[in-house]
Length: 132
Image (cartoon, rainbow, N blue to C red):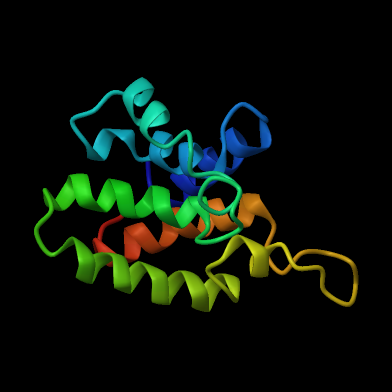
C-alpha cells in the first residue's frame, strides 16, 4: 500500500466514527511497528480533540509522532517529529486542534479532521522518505 492509499485509509477510518484522529493514523501505519492494531488503538485512545479534548496538538500529528518513535526506536525521534510538525503546519495551516477547527469566513474549518489525518500520514511518509 502506498502513502496515498494509507492516507485515504486513515481518512476513512476517521470518517467511520469508530476511530479518533490519532487512532486513525496509528492504525493505517500499524505495520510500521511491532505492535498490534489493537494495542496501538488503545495507546492512542486519549489523543483526540487536541490531546484529550484540550484543543492542543492535533491528534493525527501525535499519532504520526507515536509511530515515528516506534519506527526509530527512540533514536533521533525528536528531529523526525520536528520535521513532521513543520511539514504538517505547511499543509494544514496550523498544528493545534483549536486553530485547525477554527471557522473560516466561509464557515468551514481551516482543515477538517479527515484532511489532518491524511496529511499526518503524508508527512510521516515524507520524513521517512518512503512510499510505504
